[in-house]
Image (cartoon, rainbow, N blue to C red; front, top):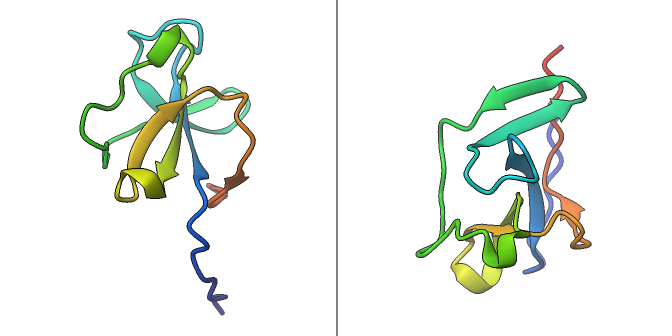
Length: 88
């Protein structure tokens, strides 16, 4: 059974982040749990993104202010997660 939720227009985390959060040249990966990395094979980046602004944008969120496209932002930004992946 699926639950239905309405979108409130807030930004939400997608759980993707840079493979090395201290290096903006590394690719984005899904990190569903410690020690596990899965490649990001689909993306929906907003125009001009990812841009690693101020060398501090290492995580990915959906941005309603950017037509609900993906945006890179600092992992310290407070927001809810959209989903959680459980491979088992």
